[in-house]
Image 1 (cartoon, rainbow, N blue to C red):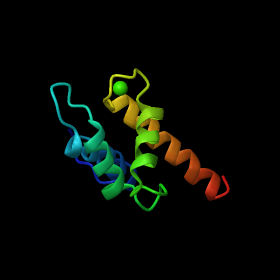
Image 2 (image 1 turned 180 degrees about the vertical axis):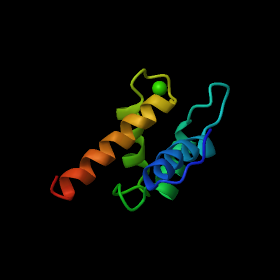
Image 3 (image 1 turned 60 degrees about the vertical axis):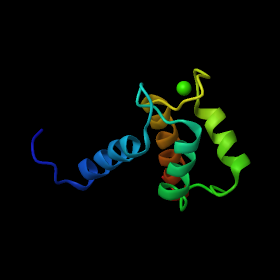
Image 4 (image 1 turned 30 degrees about the horizontal axis):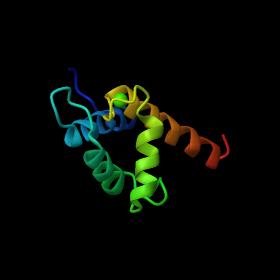
Length: 93
Ligand SMILES: [Ca+2]
């Protein structure tokens, strides 16, 4: 890969690296506990109630589109897209 140095490229790599930091299992997906750790540690300023087990469970259920009890990279990207849309609205765009 060529040198990555723009803010957007750094942000995109941070999204990818954060997923892999927490991903476990054969498929490299996020189990519920790992997903919870990711939300609590990495998204606690953008998502509310990340300390609440029930809130995290509901987010997990909402984004586990294929209901296999794991969050795949594509499902994680859907959550990231949701957060980005929320930020866009918040900032009036
Ligand atoms: Ca899934």
